[in-house]
Length: 196
Length: 318
Image (cartoon, rainbow over all chains, first blue to last red):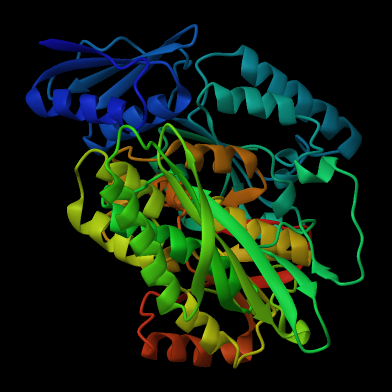
């Protein structure tokens, strides 16, 4: 069963209330909520995630169609704005690519990131440790590539200790800060982990 | 907006609006300076008497945040005379007057205009010794940050519109109506390097104003932030007010450790009404101050972070 709710024009928190009522009334099915502002979109999405539902958002102009699948409803279409991700995890350990002259390594890392964007499916996560955190800060030569990957749903993580060491924490411009526990978790949970 | 106007100068103006502080301070003589502040808003709770109390506590708070003592207050009222009964207005004013009296101050007048929706607030005048003014721009590396009220009034006020999380909403109302008077009195015995009250820009917005104004870097321990009951669940369910998103959008300089959950990030930006005092105090005095605050019944008081170094207002939340 599917319920459609048009919550356009409603003030916060009315869209969430309407969506909650609909979600509470179905045990197995789909609820589609249409909203017309970012706050409502974010809040309805939070509600869906809090209910452990699958959620997909289709933006059409200024309107968002939020599909929420509850229970066994599995007929939710694949996300429209996200590239298909695999369970591959990359770990970058320095700000250049390969052994040898740094000048060449700097050229190669740019080429690598560019190629990574061109090649699908994308990895699930890219992590940066030691001098590789120079790649995720504001004056990084590959910052735009990484932002593009993050936009496509790739998780970008930089080692907090390393950012501290290089005194770059306030310059981090893409993704979020992480710690060694998460790095190890990601590496051991990945179906394929690539260290560079 | 005010920065677009020509700069005014006066030797007696001790605190103007340049540093986004809580109130203006004007020196009268060597022992007395005048504190002036004004705030008003639309109802955030249904009960008009409670609304009056909250609006008054919120307006008085700016005087406490400057280290001062309120003396007089004037009402500012917008009210739909045709569509709402006069008793509602009376209840709002009664709430305000009771709260002002609790603060040891007195209402000396005010002004009402006909308006489509009710609005209420006060302009408060207080005094402070010119050498004892607390500003938001004196935090020093090595200071600990203490907050004196729990966070989440914006989220819970949003949940109240859905008639949900009744316990949390009740706690939020109680918290919003509470004066910062006792906390301010206790603070006067300590070397407070910086002080502000947490209001519309949310916890991190006001941490940022303090950090940027003091030219320092701040670490915040997210798990130490005191939260109102059910605020976590309400935020997680999507009762996040638009202002929290605006605050978050504005404050891009915050870096979050990955493990900080989304609901807590939202609460860090949740706009507060009549929030607690945010205090920057030397490390060696922090424990004693915290103990005294709690002993005086301010049980939500917590150390939530520290000033780590000089900087430009960088905030790291872990």
